[in-house]
Length: 152
Image (tube, rainbow, N blue to C red):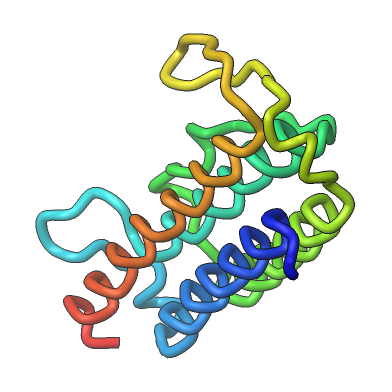
């Protein structure tokens, strides 16, 4: 029987792949274009997903020394390079896969401190993984809608 951590890792891989596939048909111009009435571009969402996964999985679950600049993820004046952001999502995914493959199931219940919205909270590593999955699902829907709105 497959371990819970393997199941969570596989699902996260599926979501990351779906995000990359949703972005693939978009030109770099469209990746950096904001649909009318929306704040973020598809590229900003991709950059943000990579930063969030590094924080929640690499730092919170894996203990990697990750410094996150969340504001930079949303920088409107910094264009997103398609090749770079897709490659970064791939690298982030590889490290996530390694962390979750090495994570014993007994560690899922371990608590860790996270900073969210300017406050510190205590969550389990299991929660951090589920948070990442939910986050990918949320932004995947946004990315698909943006691609349609932009005609990509």
